[in-house]
Image (cartoon, rainbow, N blue to C red; front, side, top):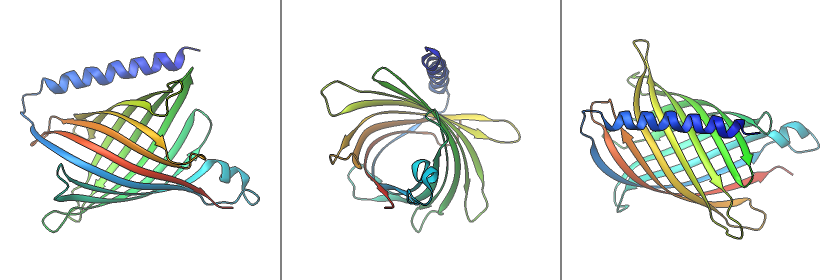
Length: 235
């Protein structure tokens, strides 16, 4: 019964050790602040009478994100993302997505392919989730880059309170045939609020902190993240 908690504890310890190593890096990071606003939706593409299994387990995902400086006066990037997610069981979900980043006239646009697997478990009023993601970035100049991300999140359901806290820790590792390299950590504290009684529309608000390391120009970045999400299904 305690296996999910033991696994989560081991993963958290490993991620914190990587964070400690990152703080010991000799590269002095720059500092930055961002505002990120997103709109997302998920859709059930199959009606229940035609394909009940796919109707229950398959989701089509779409997302648009705007990134700006802390004063929201300068656009840094606009991301468009589309993907699929399939629920294999209550424990496992598999997904794939493609994101295209528009970075303005003075910077090259970037495409990103991703495949991911998510494990989830519930212990009392606490939800534990672990996500492993493989990402491949590409640009018009063919400067491809592969990343492996590991994310552990914990959400606790507070009795008689609508805003439940969500805490997550995530590591980033660059993959290369000459050797893999740990390049950063992400920490996030946020919450999710339901905007309707059916819980099909939600508002996510979070404070996120990124710390890069072992790259030529590392950055420490604080972010305020606001996202509205909706869920729809075919009748």
